[in-house]
Length: 263
Image 1 (cartoon, one colour):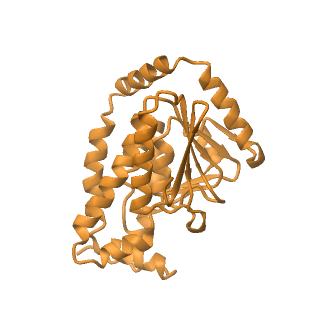
Image 2 (tube, rainbow, N blue to C red):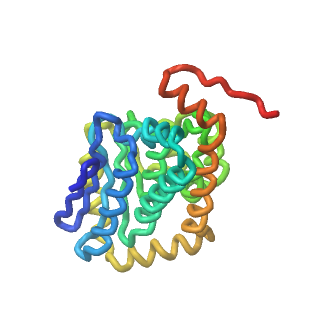
Image 3 (cartoon, rainbow, N blue to C red):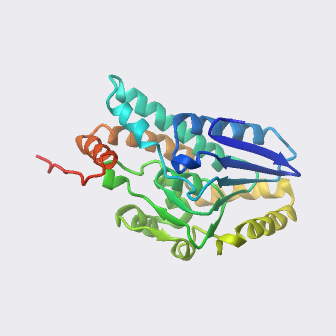
């Protein structure tokens, strides 16, 4: 059991819980390292048939811990720290994405920024009617570079651009209409719907489902691992700009950012 996550494996179901409800499950570097460790444990357990990614509290995940990001910006070795953060996030996303068993994200509230990436790394998404998906990175002077390859893979370039560039949230119903969510249910029925999906997945062969996942990725023509590697560099570089520093400072100080025009 980690400090910020919990893993429970029982009767073929691995439940990975984001457990930092007091901070809306914001992602520290340690959180992402715990996710990767949990993924490794699941991958080595042949009894696991499905992985459920869920979260404690009202929010699914508020994205990266911006206080931690700000401390990186103020450090003497910010770039190497940002690259390390991006590497750790990439490893968590890739680990979830490449697991040989079906993965299900159960989203009962807000999925924001890096939290959207965790959702997209999962094969299937169940959401409550109160859930929403939001990529506010440009408002903070940074980019959603690490999320972009997975978003394009799941919903296509056109819808991906709508979420990346509009500055607007997708409600759970909108996300379903774009192909991001399998189903949207009332919050009180989310656990029941999750159990029904687990039962349906269990009707399939573990080996056949693993082959299906590999074949699906091959058919897409997208080398997600390579794209995440490229995105890692873009993400780290974007955090070095003056706008990135201003955007993070403005968010933490609860004021509007003062964007400076390019020369």
